[in-house]
Image (cartoon, rainbow, N blue to C red):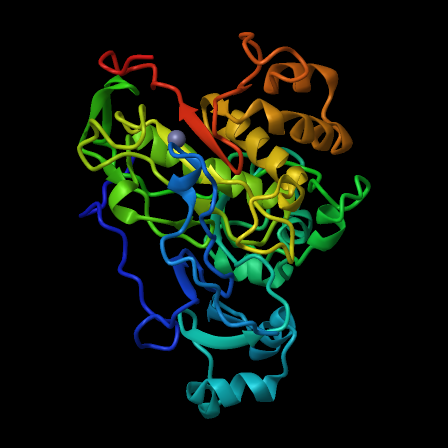
Length: 397
Ligand SMILES: [Zn+2]
C-alpha cells in the first residue's frame, strides 16, 4: 500500500474560504468537495456505552435551506453546462457565484461554489480495470460519462484495448430517487445492478492492531481521513489499523454505490491514536471497532432516536457492504432492532442464505448466529468489528 507523508487528514476549511459556518459541514476528498447542509446528528439516547458515542457534540441543527451548498471540483473536459445541469442550476447562476468563470475559461481542478438544487453523489476519480468483452461505449455508459471524455482521460490507451488494461475514469453518479427507498417501497430503486467499483484509497501501511479489542493497543494508528463518503465525528478518536481504515472506506464506498443513499453517514468512535483503554467503551482498544450511526430517512428529525426514522433499507445495504467489502467479523445491533433490519433486507431481495449468514434474528439473541449480533444499547448505531489481517500474528480475536 502506498505511504503518505503524514497521518493527519487535511484540515477542515469552509467552502467559501473562511471559517466553517455553524451547521455546515465541509467534507473534502477525491474529485469533488461536498458541503453537506445536514444538521448535526443529535444525542439523546440513554445508552451510556455506545449510542452516545456516535452522537454529535454540537447537537445544533443547521439552517433550513432549500439549496445545498456544494463545492464542485472541476473534472478534466467538464463544461460549465455540464456542471449547471448536474446540480440543477443555470449557467448564469454558476457565473454569479464564481467570479473566476467570467473570463469564459474553465480549468480542471478549480473549485466552484454551487447552491445546488440537486445533489448527486460526487464525481470520483477511479481506476477501472477493463474486463473481457468491454467496449469504450459500455464503460462510458456505466459511469455516465461521454465516450469522448473517456478517450481524452486515457490518451495513451489504444482504441483496441485488452482485458486487464487500466483506465482512468471520473465517475459521474446520477442522482437517484432516495425517497422511494426511504418511503419503505421495496420496489423502489434500491440497489444498483452490476458490480461495485471501489476507488483506490491511499492508506499508510504501518497501522497494526496488537492484542484483542477488549485488551489491546494500536501501533502506528492511522487516522480516518475526511471524506465525502462520511463525516468523522471526532478525529482524535478515529484511529484504526491500516486494515480497518482501508476496509472501512471500501465498505462505505460500496454502500454509497449500492444504496444511492446521499445523506450523511456519521462515523463515531474507532480507537485512540495508540489504542488501549477508551472510556466509556469496553472494546475499541485495538483499532478494529467502528461505531456508525444508522442512516436516517430523508426528512427525519436529526434529534430523533426512533427506529421508525431509521432508513432500514439503507442500513441493510450498509451492513451487507461491510460483510462484502469491509472484512467485518461481527456487527453489533440491539436485538430489538434486528427484526426491522431483517424485514428491510428481505424486501430488498436478500436470499434466505444471505439472511441467515448476515442476521442473528429470528434466532434467539443469545445464539451464535449471523454477523449481526445482539449487543445491549446498540439502538441507533451499529458497531462493526473488523477482522485481523491474516499476516499479523499479534492481532488477536
Ligand atoms: Zn462501539
